[in-house]
Length: 102
Image (tube, rainbow, N blue to C red; front, side, top):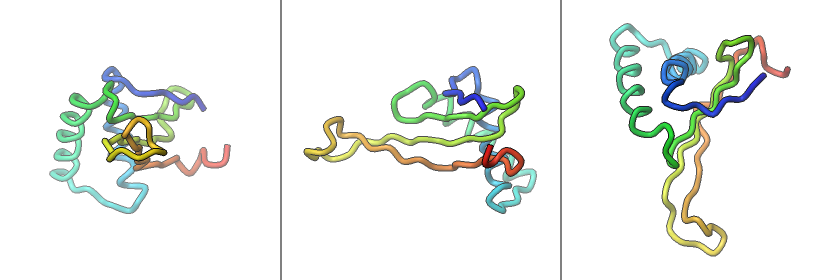
């Protein structure tokens, strides 16, 4: 599996991964909810992909997204163990069952 750091050119792949993630955690999106997620995710990615506060990692196998994870980076109060004053939060990690463990 190849791991890709998504850019704005990968916007549709990131959106698809986000929608697929909801299905993997048991959330069924009706048509309106899915459209809302797709619209808001496109807006979010347009503003944050390629910046230092959001990263989308995509696992690609045979040209298809089979895994994804998002990293949110936020400012953190100064501490001696955090020289950058930033912390990351890994969220929305999923791997399709058929490729897990490979």
